[in-house]
Structures are given as C-alpha cells and as structure tokens.
Image (cartoon, rainbow, N blue to C red; front, side, top):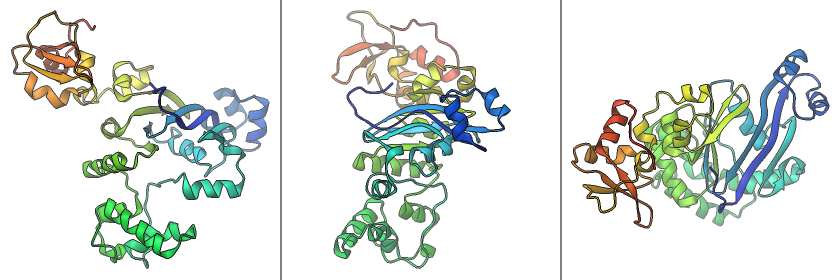
Length: 330
C-alpha cells in the first residue's frame, strides 16, 4: 500500500520491453496490449509486459522473481539503460523517455545511478580516487572533490584506508568502495539500512532472497514471465497472496519475521490485565521469547501509545508452530 503523503519519485505505466524484429511496430499495432499468443506468433519475446509501478520518495522498493522473470530488464528500462518498447516512465515528474541524450546524462550524473551486480574498481586508483572518480567526470573542483570523497569514505566505514588500492582490500571493503554488493550477507544488509537512515535515498532493488526482502523492503513487487503479479508490503504478500504463484513464492517464509503484532491481535476486553505491551508494527520475532511464557496477553499499542487490542501467547505459539490460530481478528 502506498502512502498518499509521500510523493512519487519514479513510476512507469504499461511498460513493455519486447525483443525481436519490428517489435516497436508490433506494439503500436496492438496498442500496448499484446497477448502472449500474439507475441509468440510474431516470434517476439516479451521480457517486460504491462508493468506499472509507483516508487515513493525515500522508499526501498524491491523487485523479486525467478531467473528470467524480467526483473533486471525492467530496472534497466526504468533507468533507460535499455530503451523500452512501449509505455511511459516518469522520474521526478518528468517523462524520462522524452529527455534528450544531454538531459539524460545530467540526470544520471546528479539524480539517478544504477548499481550492477558485479562491482568493478579501477585497479590503478586508490580508494579515495575511485570514490572521487565520478565527481571528476562531472568537473567538480579538486578540493571539493576530495572533501566529498573523504566524507563518503568515512560514511561507509573505510576511514584510514583512503590510500589503499583495491587489491589491498577485502571483498567486502571493495564492495563498500563501489557501493555494490549482492547483499546476501546480514552485515551488508545492516550497512544498507544504516546508509538509508542517513541518506534517505529512493531505492529500487533486486534480490532472490525473501528473508532479505523482508528485512529491507518497504514494498515488494513479484514478477513472473515479464509481468508484475502483485505489489505490497512483505506482510501483505504473505497473508494475502493474489495468486497461487505468490503463495508458493512465500510459502517457506518465516512468518514470525513478517507478521506484526497487529496482524495477530484481537479486540480484547475492557479493563483486561496484560503481562506486557508491544507496538502494533513490531514483528512477532522481536517479542516472541517474552510472550510465549506469559500468563496473560500483551497489550498492542499504536505509535501514540493508544490501546488497539491484545495478542495472546497462544496465538504466537500457534504461529511459531505453523498452526492456524482460531482467534478472531478485530
């Protein structure tokens, strides 16, 4: 669910990337609504089909799907590293597909970047020089360049290694210099969240790991065969899968990591006693150890401390055991 108070930073509507001869003519004739059968008959491949998303400012938006589902192709279309075949892309309220080459270069220099799966540092440059290289391309004055590069080196925890060469760094340190990492390790996930808390960037991110997505994402889009099947918060995808494919995709997810106290709470009774209290948005895994041994329910509070309901120890035990609770939701 999007937040109406947050502006949309990046969006696309009915976005297509079709590979094959005369793909653009084909899509114009079909007015952006080609079926899988029509594509196959024309010997075309619909790598991205009818994709529409709104990424809000400051949001971490994660795209998931099996290999070949269209994730990377869609990301490249959003940044115009490859040209979409049909549809529209909006960035900061501007039609990205109508920007000139010069305008696109300026956007990429100052407002939009893309991090690739495999990092590559210039081996003959030091850490500081590698970090400052994009700034030198922009023509930034040397004193300002060094100042900003040093600030970035400090930010990613590499102070003291400014004059080291890539070969003198560990793999994780190299990833920090290039700002690139598959983020499969917990410490790199923590690093991304730390940086996000400081920088408040808008991030569109690809991963195959649902546990990682749970930890990082505000919202997740699940893709299949080039189409976006469902978009939602991690909890929404797990509790309310739109299709059997999404249900299967999330089947082995640890529910305690995803589900919040609010999703398990009941109305409770006026004047009821409680063994403890927990915020509505708190994930079950953060308070499970405390509540399973409690004799009374925990109170569930909103951000202002107002009582919303209560959560019983048995509801958490059932969740951890993989059993469906018989309690009624509020």
